[in-house]
Length: 213
Ligand SMILES: [Ca+2]
Image (cartoon, rainbow, N blue to C red; front, side, top):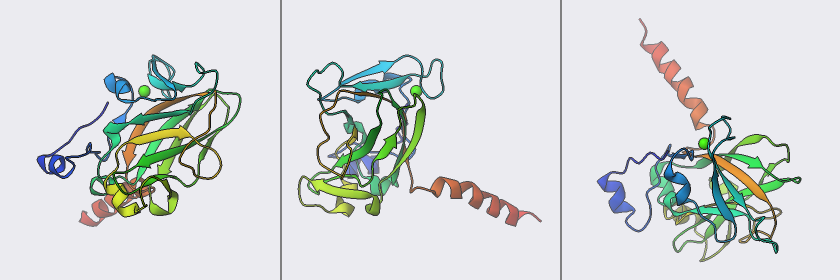
């Protein structure tokens, strides 16, 4: 499901890019799977077995059909836009390693004219057959410029062209390695700065307590 709360103001400001919205989520229970694609891997929707179990659909990204190995990655232009204006400073993703070896997953975020940024540190997904809830911070200290045009982090976050989720081990790099592997992905969510969601209910409780007689 993808929640679209576009206003005329947002559409005007992001005329050249899609408008990401805080809280939007792709859970692959509907047609959202068709918006994700890969030029180096097959992308298919699996009918059941997501994090919630029976009937929870998810996306499977695989290079197993490519004997020579291709980059294990998936992209979506619908996740482009002005992340700063939207207040999106992290991404939550559920990931499933489908291989007998660990994967190292990173976000890759190319921008319009301000460089390509990727996660400074990869999230290691063990080969344990379990879904893993991951939080990718998009804050400046957690992203590394890896090429494209000259890097300008602040402007890049305001002009993201697309979102890529990929296996890229080692030091941050523009390209991932060729590999024959697969992973499952579900519940991709646009979230605020890491830790903010925890503070919201605490703040609410504090305000509510103060208003009591
Ligand atoms: Ca799902």
